[in-house]
Length: 422
Image (cartoon, rainbow, N blue to C red):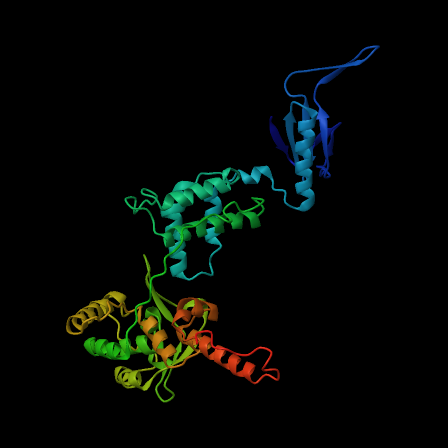
């Protein structure tokens, strides 16, 4: 079979010296007999070469599309499918579906102007290293569910990733790569280039959540003392729940020592090729967190009498920011000394001090909404998913109260309350 599309504006030319304007074709559909007819006295004979039946339809833009078939039933069946798609609004111009995935991915990437520089850099890295080398030259019409599923499955196997070809990619990286492909295909659907997203419902590897590492009050205070010049920073991370980027970007004017509050409204993050970039906190939402007295004194000493726009923790000369590398140089050495002098001291990282803040707040009786605000989570669901197992449950208390209510019921003899373990 074959097919072609004509300009929807129709034809233009000159007849008898007069110009003829382009006429837009109306939407229509039909099946044509391409073989020539020869009439005799008794019957009409049809003869010709090639496929005899041609299905023709004009789409909503006025463009004519044709395809030839050997039988009239095949032509009519194909035309019925196209007509149903046009009527239901799921029709896509075949010419547009032949566009390469890579070209659509570049337009999708250009549309992400509202993302943070770190997110843009992460998307760019995934596109260049994993997605485009495989899908860049593939036409949209040739991408199907089976192909996407096979590609996703291969990433976890040996040789699946260009960088870690000896052991495959982690589950987290595979999920990120699939997210990019699905987002580009979803963008193509919105642009009218595809009918549906073939990357939907693809089976993804399961991420194994690591158990959070946290410190006790004694361990946190010991670590802060070992960090010396960063004592105040360790206490703020462990008791106030700030992220590393939020702490790096914290300025003197954001700290209210009288009210023991910190206003978190900035974050500084390292971006490859750009250095440290200052922006809004994660989820673009500012928040106010309390400062316990154990951290308030060292924080006030670190601030001193400096100006309101000065960074709380002085930056390194090379970058203008306190880099995570400079912090880790001091922090990791302090953790090592603590582990040597105190058996069982966890190998904690600066970011994991957020877990310490969460566990200490839970032990102090903080509810889910307080913990969500403290850590800057987007929703209480995220907080529960991460730390819900650490919160005390009231199952025994609920059962006790229900038993007491049942014993005071007006018909105690009907359903006597008995101890099943007696």
